[in-house]
Length: 141
Image (cartoon, rainbow, N blue to C red; front, top):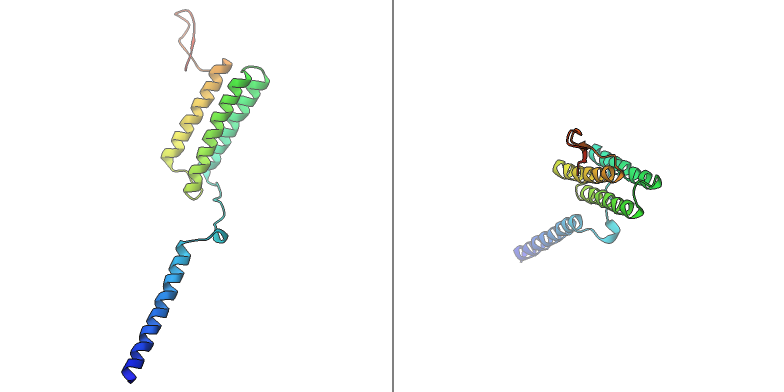
């Protein structure tokens, strides 16, 4: 009889230990609404640099519109493109602990450069191709 009591005690103890460990494991991997982690801080040189550049292009769009160098429709379209780039940067950073991987960073910079080039072409200050020997210079883009 002593052996059966001992076996029951060991089985009960093992079940309780297993249940507590399983609960701790589950609690660590399944967070509830009250345990939600705060949003990622968007820090780091890539994120900061990209956001600063988006703000600079956005300010250029605003300045061009105020100077009547572009129409309201052009300004709105360029603002929307810049905003989408900024949102994409924030989305990437949020999914990667506040960082932007190199390949995605360069893709976002390329897209932002396209917006900036479009702004310069629309305002007439874009980089011109040709040396004038054939009758003029032509906008790049």
